[in-house]
Length: 401
Image 1 (cartoon, rainbow, N blue to C red):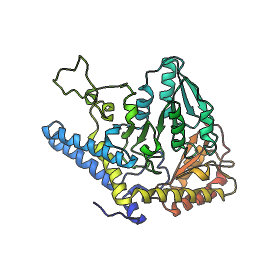
Image 2: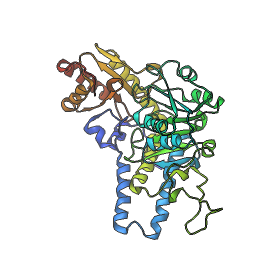
Image 3: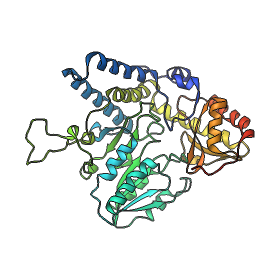
């Protein structure tokens, strides 16, 4: 096992993209560490040289998936039996939302801060089954979230879907308190963990959530096309398979189904349908393992929060800059606007003129930075200096289509 290091220079040296650019967009896609690329390349080369169907490959692939589930389980504080590997966060949300036997008139509660990837499954069941969606208005996410949701609960509410850390203001929502409220009414809770997994401590067992969906490519710095979902034991008893395949089944190939039915696996692995991109799965396990063993998640979480607050303070001190993120419940994701500047145009100018990578958000229309554990205060300072320089050439903000 590699020795943990808090040497930021050594960490950055293992992530070439962060030394080539001012990389402040982990909330969209984190930089790949060298050990992840090396792991992925080794698996791809083995598949090229040895083929993908030699008998040993089945065992190797099974072990790689096991390693990935175990790393995710260690990250989220649960058993690997409650983890299924997915392609992205939205896969996991679909598993939770579409797995309920919906009836016309049933209700879902969500918030006005959800990512389209979380909203789409909700509107799918609304259109297909006549389900009503109720939306809690949360402002910037720093107020009485539990109260806003509680006011929408009715006897027909069957599901609450919300983010742990919002993608559009950077607020950390009180998921544990919402779950406690929901379970008092027999309501399942599905959580979008896209911005929380790898940026703040998450223990799904302590939170009590039913479904917690995460990506691999954001704060965990893994490859694209990877993710995972936690399914609590009680939810395993409730959620039905929406998409099923060979990998979902407990009944081995060639054995007659029991009672005429093919039985799903007893664990969350039942939600894994078929073959996977094994270099990506190996990279997913490698990225979490590298952060866990080399960087250390406790240090990474503290570092992310420190840099987030440093960015919040630095931006707040700039005249004409308005920070949207509520400081009392935030981590490393900071959203802001600049008077007289169109967010999309300023993001483009920051990239072209200052080599700074941030992004704009449509709702609310603003600029978003996301500081990872590999960033430095100097990265934030370069962003601030670039805003001072480039704002003189800004065009007024316009509604973004």
